[in-house]
Image (cartoon, rainbow, N blue to C red; front, side, top):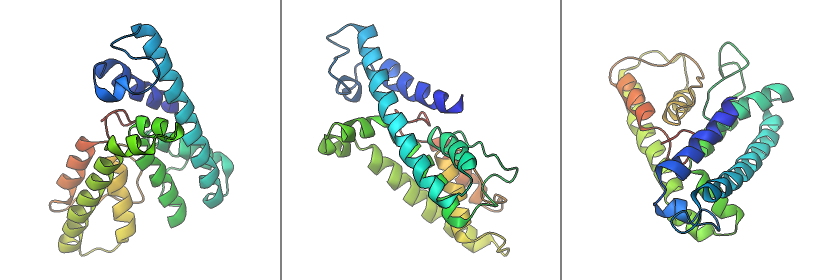
Length: 211
């Protein structure tokens, strides 16, 4: 259900909230401004479902390489791509290997990028995918948030229960609105405020995070 919900969020933003925007017009062969609105929405939903399913399949296969239990790998990827944050384990991602944690968070990052990017890439329109700017916005937001957050953790924390890597994954998970955790969230000083602001920022428009 969470996986389906991620697709619904992305489709709603692109097809309903941005009907006259450049991304929505360029999504497929049907132009919302020129064609029938219902046909346009169906065409957009079909293309989004195709790339969403393909992206999920690729990440499931990659996650299975680092998380031996294929059932857990499947559940984690479905939750991560849809930025839902559901984990089959009570400690979220804490008991998985660092590589497994990183792979799940990578799926969260991909889910926070507009699905239009993957539609364009699938159509061989790589330049248009880059010009859309979604990848740049998400990566810049992650980079800036990480620098500020980790600086706050380093300057105020005397407890090294979590590594900087684990702190970074917690921050990225929050920024993508997924909600996975690799351990206790550091809540001293400005770090908690930075994490909350990152969560409010969220993913890009047209992503499963909603933007």
